[in-house]
Every structure is written in C-alpha cells, then in structure tokens.
Amino acid sequence: VTTDPVSPLPPPPIPLAPGSTIGILGSGQLGRMLAQAAARLGLKCHIYADSPGPAFDVAAATTIAAYDDRAALAAFAMSIAVATYEFENIPVATVDFLSRTVPVRPGAKALACTQDRILEKRLARELGAMTADFGPVDSYDELLARIGQIGTPAILKTRRLGYDGKGQAKIRSLADVKAAFEAMQGQPAILEGFVPFQSEVSVVAVRGLEGAFAAYDVIGNVHRDGILHTSTVPARIAPEAAGKAVDIARRMAERLDYVGVFAVEFFALETASGQDMYVNEMAPRVHNSGHWTMDGAAVSQFENHIRAVAGWPLGSTARHSDTVMTNLIGADYNAWATLAAEPGACLHLYGKHEARPGRKMGHVNRLTAKK
Ligand code: AMP
Image (cartoon, rainbow, N blue to C red):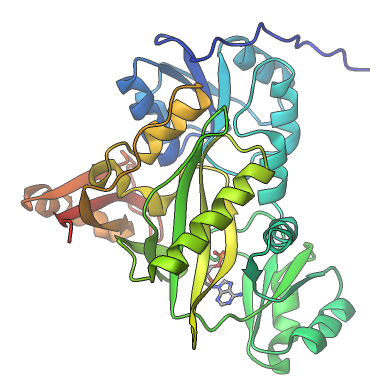
C-alpha cells in the first residue's frame, strides 16, 4: 500500500510574482531556452530530469531522478509554484501525480492526446481538419487489412514515442510490408496514407490561462534526414491557407484546455482551388520551428510559454523581420566561430559538448527586412 505523500499547495497567485519558481520536466535545449526566458522576467526555474542536460547550466535548481520516483517528484512539487514540460514523452502518470500538488500547464489531457498519433488525428478530424487516411495497427493481419483500405504508398509509424522521423517505415508496395511491420518491434502502430505534399508548414501559437490566443506567422519547414533543417518566415503559402491552419490550431488548443505554447505541423497540398492543409501532428511544447521567434518576433515562443504558464498576459507574437532559422546539427557545429563572425547572424548554442551525428547543437537566425 502506498500512502500518497503529496498534498495540494495553495493555488499560486495569478499572475505568478517575479521571484517564483517554475518547475520544468526535461533538461534539453528547449528547457534551457525556457529557463533563459524565465530569468528575463525575474522568474526562477527548477529542472527535473532523469539525466543532466543543457538546461542544467542555466537553472536555479536541478533534480536528477526517474520520472516515476514519487519521493523525488513530491519534493520537486513542494519547491515550485507551477510545473511545465519541455518534451512530450514524459509519462502522463507523472503529470497526474504532480497535479495533485501544483498546477501543471499544459495539463494531462493535452499530454495524453498528443502522445498518441491516433487520438491526435481523431481530434483533428473531429474539428473538421484534414489528415492523412489512417488507422490503428496492432497485428500483422490488421496491417494487411489497413493496406487494403488505405493503399500504397503509406507510412507505418509507432503510435507513441516517435520523434524526428524515428519509429517510421515507408511502405512503397506490398514487398515492404513485412520489414515495416518488423521495424515497429511489436509496438502499437498507426498506418497513414502518404500525403503527396508540396511543402510542410507549422503553426506555433500560445494560449493563456484565461483562454487568450495568439499565433505567430505560419512557418515553412524543410527537413533533412527526418530532422528539421530550416524554418522560414513568412512561409510561401496563401493567406487563406495560413488562416485555415491557425484556426485549426486554435480549435485544437481550446478542445484540450491548453495552456502554453504548442505547435501544429501541417502538410500543404496544392489543389485546383488553393491549398489543402493536412494536420500531421501537434507538439504540446515550444517547438524547433519556433526558434526564429527569439530574434524575428516581438516576444519569443519561450517567453510566451513562460508568460502563459505563469498566468501573465501574453506577449506580442508580431514578426518584425523576415527570418530563416537554420539548425546546427552534428558537425555543423564546427562552424561556430565563422557563424559568430557573420554580420547579422544571431547565433544560439546549447552548450552540448559532443557534436554527435544527428544531434541538435544550436541554431542560427538570419534576419532580413520584412517585405
Ligand atoms: P512525423 O514524425 O510524423 O513528423 O514524420 C516525419 C516526416 O515524415 C514528416 O515531416 C514528413 O516529411 C514525412 N511524413 C510523415 N507522415 C507522412 C505522410 N502521411 N505522408 C507523407 N509524408 C509523411
């Protein structure tokens, strides 16, 4: 029998006063940039993660413990006024447990939905958005049946815990089915019809504690080897399509009682009458495609997330410059001194020591006058 060691703290004041501490689950670069933004507003951050990471260098307090370590979570909860997270693969049970003591923003409902590609796509469809054809796959026979319905080409993905194109297998023809099924390693999966898109875009937006909503300009994204390479604003997309995408993002956030910054990724498909916007996925956190906002917008996605979870008024999402964000992946990092000397390049490095292939080491924002 486990006795629950956690009892609720009095609700934090709204807005949270400067000097208060925000807890962040996850120690990656997103947590680092959140903590930096919080510091600008006089707020402190306590980072909780199962291993140290870039956020630890800039945090007021740190805890290294497993995400199911109740004693460590209880102590963490007692040390903070509100909790948030910087990656979506933390267990929902962790958020539920913390929620008994402190508010967690965004809440467990948003986390549970966005952890599961099926629930996420169902939500998008319910709200009238387009998605790829899809269906759950839990066995080889079910996969064959789904291929019969959806056809090829198609993509088989793990339902949960996928990122940067990991846990995915393309099925070009029936010859690929067996290998694709084996690549899932027995995990529940989703089969998606292939969307022959012309471009990928994302909406990064923020919803405040009282329901206020603001979106940044729609972002055009280019991936390399399944990892985001560049994000460009403004995206080359018709204003009506951009408006549709932002509207879907707003409705998804409302349905999930969302508080904080989030991203919705879309495939844009040209049609005779304009552009169709297919929802691919929603990230319940600040997003790599929003890094341009650090230099190209009035208030960055990181500050806006902190403002939202702290119950502050949202900051302006207005874009003041055209911006191209380029990720520094692996060996790209070796050019840091050259980039530091490049006039007008805004360089951000995450303090990681080893530039392993595929690892996000930093990014650079290049600004030009808004056209
Ligand atoms: P995801 O992990 O879902 O973001 O997928 C990674 C990348 O694979 C996307 O950015 C697309 O380039 C591609 N992709 C994923 N799903 C589909 C799909 N249903 N149709 C076409 N391309 C896809």
